[in-house]
Every structure is written in C-alpha cells, then in structure tokens.
Length: 137
Length: 100
Image (cartoon, chains in turn yellow, blue):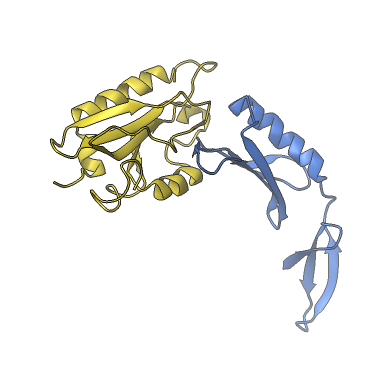
C-alpha cells in the first residue's frame, strides 16, 4: 500500500470535506473573528481509508499543528490549515516562510486553504512512506 | 556610488573621483531612530494582526532602508508575521508583506 500524494489528498472527498468545513469555521468574511483552523489527515494502514481530525482553533495568522493525536492503526499522511485573511487587503495567501520550514520538518503534505484556492507546502507525500512514527514520520 | 554604515549607524555614500580614488564620504539625510521605526511598523502590524504577542521583532538598517520583521516566537507553529521595508529618512513604509 502506498501513502497518498498531496494531489491525491486534494481529490479525496473526506479530505476536501474537512478542509471546506475548516474554511467556513475560519470566518474569513468577518474582519474581527477570522482565524486559522486546521488539523490532520490519516490513512488506515489496512484498509487505506482516509479520516481526519481537527486541531484546536488557531489565531489571526497562526495555528499549532505540531502534535497530531494518534489513531490506532492509522498514520498521519497530511495536514491542513486555513489562511483566512484576504489577499485584497494585502495578505499573502500561500505558505509563509515558517509554514515552509515547519511543514518540511513535519514531513507530510500541508494543504493550505486560502481565498484564492488551496496551496501546497511540505513534501509531495509522507516522507518515508509507511515507515516511521504513527504521527509525523 | 556605494555606501557604508558608519559607527553611528548612519549611511554614508562614498564618491569615486576621476582618478578612481575615493574622493570623499558624504553624509546623507538624517536617519530615523530604531525606536521610531519600530513604532511605525508596530502600529501597522497591530492593525492587521491585532495581537502581536506571538511574535518577536527583528530590525536592521540596510542600504535600502530599515527592515523590520515580525517572526513567530514558537518555531513549531504554522503561521507568519508582517515584514516591512521602511525609508530610513522619511519613515514611509516602502514595502510590506503580511504572511499568515
């Protein structure tokens, strides 16, 4: 069994659904309440089924995703978070320098939902495949 | 022409004469103090980010002006801060970038 690529996660219904829900919860339309949301994407190592967990909500421009909860029999194969601040107000929609560094360290693709679509950061798929820790490899 | 930062943190330009030798060092307009530059950057960043407690600030006077960068204190978090290039004489924000 192969771990999914970032492109495959982008087309996975479960992953897309949880990312869309996170985007709605980010309140991107509200200048006072908008904040980052995010979480982790898992793959069952027997069935290949994709599941997801949401993290505690973040702040205006940052979120803590460094400790994914473990799910028995599953591996973390991706992570996601939102960039809710509008490009029209001068905000960068894509990954920050910190995003690039942290996502490379975590070793799984990061799907970042912004107002202009979904940006990718981190490796193209979980580093090391099925090997390594159940959380980040 | 090229320039250097002197020991007071002031930018001075070096002129090259017809002989190819350095002719003079010419002080340019007065520089804004770093605390005034920080105030300019902080006021703008607070409008965009509201709460700056998650950030540390890096400031450096370079040839093109003051560079002010708000970086996350915690290197394990996903996110980003504000980055500025501020005119060292007028205090005008020449360039800014809001990362998230």
